[in-house]
Image (tube, rainbow, N blue to C red; front, side, top):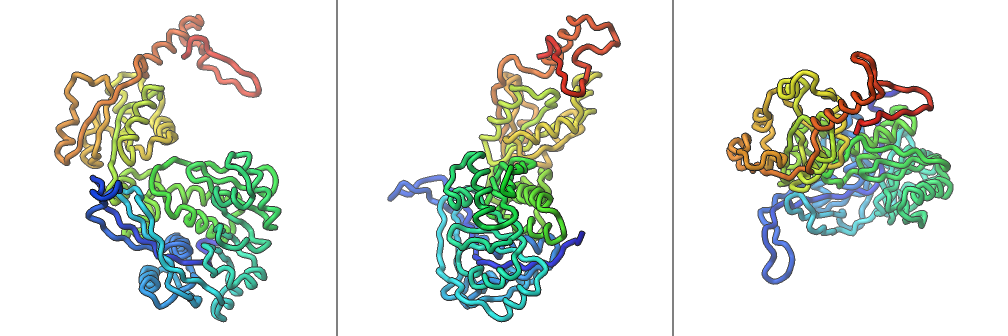
Length: 475
């Protein structure tokens, strides 16, 4: 299997601009927010973003795209310089630009400008495509893919990322990656999982391609060869900026296929890459000079990405030995207070010191895995001390959440949060839920079974095969 094989990306480049500020009031002359103190961030968009991200994976990348002599084209070339080799196709009109205005990291409005289109290819572009080992088509409907369609038909690309305004992929393309809305529109279907499965199968036949994978955002991706689909779930749920996630998916899938991966392996890797991309801040963090997007399980990097968008960081803590409805309700409410939630969880040694021998019932690795599986949890951080003060001083959340069982008592972390302008708050627990109570009820249930000391009761047994069992009294 090849490592970091070269990739040629052909498609429509855009210049993306984010204007990020704060909105604390409405305009006096219209019911619209006033976004103040905006900072401007430029980045590659469209096929240029896909090419840039593929290069960040460590592979040589050539981008064939429309480039003019307008200011937006020159800005884009500066952003790509040193990362991607660009073969320019003649552009009629200025390069397309997308400008997002964001308030505290959330889009308020998008402004589009530039009507440039590609109408013809160059000999250099055709030669590069004919000699390419692997090709990704990133079609945004502005003519680049159509201009070289005859060459692509001779040598079908590995991946075609379509757009409603663009043409269909050439027959024989190894993998086509429409988004959910694009697949529904192309196959005139609904948006249920059953409808999407049928749409993907219909598109395999209609486009005459071996495989179609429909990207489903936080749900992952649906891969179809024309029959029963394979659902590849996302490894984690993130509430970050999804802008550019489709480009990240296509770039990762094309790169893996170029390296020799099977289609299923490429889709699984692309889902992981897109999930990490969103968790690290999305396209807004794509040009971070610190390097490639950090892994999804790095809470500090995730916090930095949220703060870069002027978002609010929320943290909550506990042992979470046996996760129950009270925990889930608290964490869901905490997540609604801001733009990300970091759960600070006690290590096994810390739980043992607090709760005594025999605790935790659930080891740290399992507790962390269960917490990360919750859609409301963006990251998990572990502390080994008896209290989370040192970890909080490192993470510096804007809001620290405690359960309602502290009501009437002074929160020990409140003074620490004030050092950086944070706030400690109480949220109510669901009444009567606790890990300790669950353990006690489980022990009582085992006692009622009459199992002798040292002998396994029903709750200790594991059963293989097709049989089943229940432990009476274990609630």
